[in-house]
Image 1 (tube, rainbow, N blue to C red):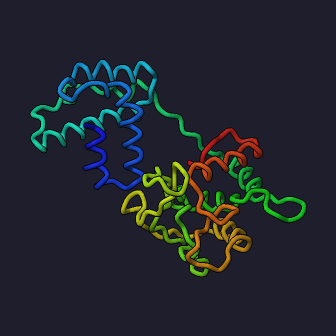
Image 2: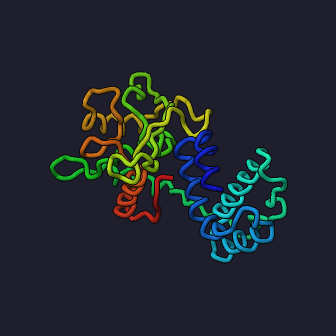
Amino acid sequence: GLRYWLDNFKALELKDSSFNRLEVTVESNIVPYIGHYMTKELDASVIQLQLINRLVQENKSYSTIKKAYLALNAYYKKLISMNWLEHNPMQGVTLPAQKLFGAKKIKCLTAEERDRFVNQAVSIYKNGTARYRYGQIYVFMMYTGLRCSEMLGLTWKHIDLENKYVTVEQSLVTVKNRDGEHGSRYITKLQDSTKTLSGVRKIPLCRQAIDAISSYKAEHCNNDLDSYVVLSAEGNPLKTRHFERSVNYIYKQAGIDASGLH
């Protein structure tokens, strides 16, 4: 039932990246727990004991549990709207209080760590070549607040150095390969919009951002304004995970206890 709901309804209303996240929730955090039950066998008690409470017992995060709860609730609401079911069992299911999980600690760089990161990111070898292919890009992101997918979706035409701003209107995401081509389980796909409508914006560029992207452009731009700013050494668009993980090498070399772009 859940697979039918995903493929025939949710796939029509969600962006590929959002659909991927929902699919992972269903396949990893719902089906293994209650997938062997028929829909008519699932009442509030079964869902509470066999799904929600087991996720809690396995120390899954509040976010993971809430996603499973919301996905199942949306599934039942769809069944009811189509007159395939009269009652939503999720009305009798209790979502654990968020306060029981504690606050997620967010790591922010200090001013001193920021300077160490920048110095390491833009460092060069004795022969003058950049130590890190994407070092200047990470500095550019630091001073513009761009999300990973937004940075990967930028082309050179989006960056106006003369007027000192960057236009954000699309994103490049890594999604599951559903057509069986390209020989890869995951592929990159351009989305015509950002995460939200308010995400379409123009960002003014400060001196640090201009210096970083100018240095990168001098080395990597081939004067094709439609080309992605961030490309692999082979000239291919980057998958999100690779780009996010590469920054960790800079943290490590700078002696900073941090990981990931956010």
